[in-house]
Length: 450
Ligand code: ADP
Ligand code: ASP
Ligand code: MG
Image 1 (cartoon, rainbow, N blue to C red):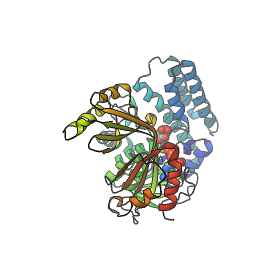
Image 2: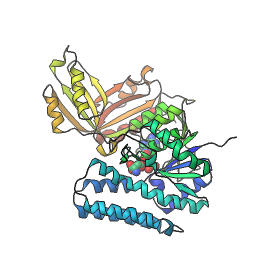
Image 3: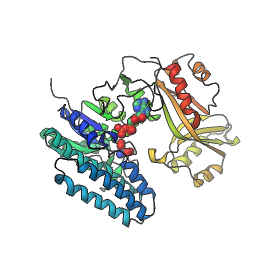
Image 4: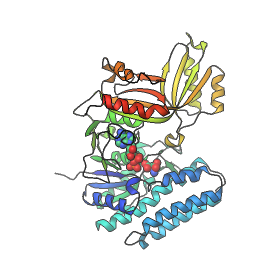
């Protein structure tokens, strides 16, 4: 059988410390088909870098940079030959100290530059550890040379054609000669400035590398053994899923399942690359295969949760029998780069959900300026502290008698908004944040078949 080409991504918890890194190294050593290894920042580093960006006091920033230094030096000291990468690591940490101390204006461009330190540091240390553990020379590769994006700092959009050209030019010769370790999450725009793909974006990077290098398999190694029927941290009885379709996995991640970045399956669908999700802690436990067509197609496969939702209700009698009203409303939102998730309308009002977790999504937040523009032509109400719950599966739009039992099971819960029918793969609704865990537990017990 000819060699397969696999891209394997290891997330933050898989990079948490030297022991965690050694576990990843043995997974990689055991399978020579894993040609491109994509790593995240060491667990907690991107959060620290985000904190560093958000404080204006240079002393506080330097303190955070100090914490990041300590974390990395602790792992470095666990290497067999730390001296081989010490200079590179110290010079990056010194650069971070200087940025912490000297920055006066925190531009969007500088924010992404700062965020990139996590993956740059972890990938250097991991390349050395992997080479030591496997006895094979792994090549460190700067992802920014290949992951070309636009300049939408914070949630940059990849340029798939440019990425493919760069991968062919710069990565193919390296893959012919050996194996590569590179970074998730980071890229660069056309002038060379560093960009990031949004929080959790390493999964997406790995998928882009897989697409651009014509990989057969994309592997996502994380801290859970598989994609579960719901977040196992919320429902202890959640069960691992053996096989799921691209469409279902895509809906699950879009609606909040953190195990995959929402855009991950998009490149995989374009090139029909099979995706595997498994645990770097328990690599022998069965994981999940994400495939074009899954063998079984349950109506409700899984439930996802997205917190921090804001419901914006826009109400105006002018809407009645008028054309162009919705266009006007969406123009305001689009002018301010507000990304709308769900929409329902009645004759005189429109309800929209927005993700208020700006760090997770990189999206713009509602502010007074936007609200006053909307108030010029409508009454506006805002409700926050809501959670979006999505039932994900197959043929949900065409299954008779589904919503009765679902909402019947929640008869004591105030459901704020329901979206059903737009997609055959989901039914979703909003509830108060403090009710969400109970709601998911009730629905999981009742509708997810053992
Ligand atoms: P990594 O650092 O490897 O990228 P993440 O923390 O981003 O890992 O994603 C893994 C986490 O996703 C799990 O620890 C789990 O809590 C969460 N998660 C949410 N929904 C699901 C789900 N349906 N199945 C598995 N994990 C889920
Ligand atoms: N390190 C980045 C984050 O924490 C990207 C990733 O882990 O996927 O968001
Ligand atoms: Mg992740």
